[in-house]
Length: 150
Image (cartoon, rainbow, N blue to C red; front, side, top):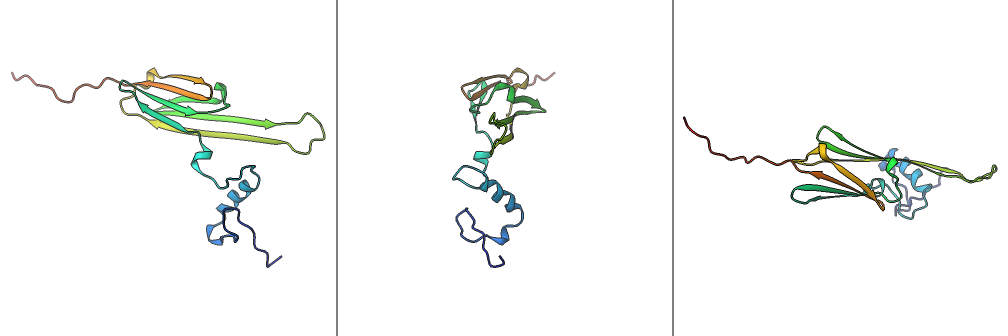
């Protein structure tokens, strides 16, 4: 057992000891996933958002396929729009002598700060896996003006 070298699925046949103990958890996660793509990255661990400036308002679209609106927490903290997804998935067989049973708990969040946003007038709608959030802008008063002299 002393001479065994573990196989690293990330492309190298030898484990890299300089990576550290933190990489051990990623290796365990990679072993128990069904995907051929391994390793952690931002694209798979969070939902994607698009932010569009429409002139008089902002529109934020968040991709959330298969998510129910009860699983989404949309709130404002200070000047930030916070989108939080809390989801519990259970794959359960009805037989008592099951051989395999899985549970997955997912929590993802994104925080968006938009200049000149009227955060008190936000409207949101979930339709076919896309959460669309409309945020009107606050009308800006011009920075330059003439001052009358007495």
